[in-house]
Amino acid sequence: MDIATGTVHTEGADIVYDYQGDGPLLLLIAGGGGHAARHYRLMNVLAERYTVVTYDRRGNSRSVVDTETDLDMAQQARDAAAVIKAMGHDKAFVFGNSGGANIALELAADHPEMITAMVAHEGPTLLILPDAEACLAWAERVHKTYLTEGATAAMEVFNECLVGFDPLPPAGAMQNADFFMAREFLPISTYRPDFDAIRGNRVPLATAAGHDSADAYYARTARLHADLLGCEYAEFPGNHLAFIFDPPAFATALTDLLHKLAGDRTE
Image (cartoon, rainbow, N blue to C red; front, top):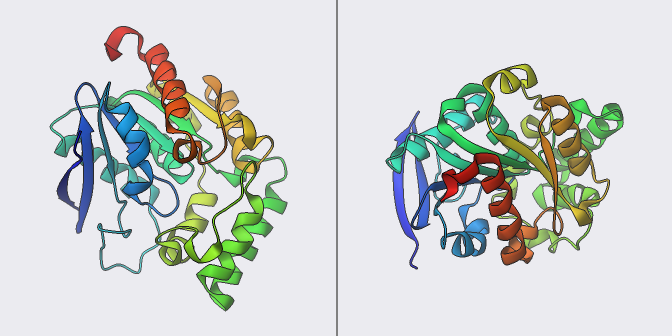
């Protein structure tokens, strides 16, 4: 199936999105780097069951916007909602990975009516960790390295936290790395979900982390999210980017969990 492309204008930005498949709408939200193309392999598998849509997040890749403003999580959630509406739907299944999981949690807090069921995979929220002080010191070191040495050097420090796989060479580690380090990394890392609001909104949701992520900070936060939300926690195959490295296995785990959360509404 071919991938189609659309654009939605919202809050001063033209958000470019890609979609494929037929069936219930499933929104994939990218994390750091905000690049839709990282989901293409997963989309190709999931399109057998869903209409899958993903997008370049505000300020990234094709969704360029002239701004010197740091990432605003509430605005990111509104952008996600705008993409759902642009697809002609009132709600969607939602999957977010890493910073995209944080955005999905904000969507669950602010716009629960737009979510059929949701999986938040390895959302990095440092402030909730028992060792938050040490983790925040690391985050500050990453950002200071960016300010003094640039994005490539900062990505080398960032890659120290990755567990279960060898990161890509720093120069090609992530499209939009400069924007990520300048405007997104600290707001994503220091985001604290409104757990009370999410629980009260009763969105069918689960959090997840990869088996190979072990005790990486973003896997530990995923487990804490489940405890704080009183929701299911699922262990997925692979690592932080398993949806890139093994899309079929990841798609099976995601589809099974979404089906479980939403009952027969996936049919």
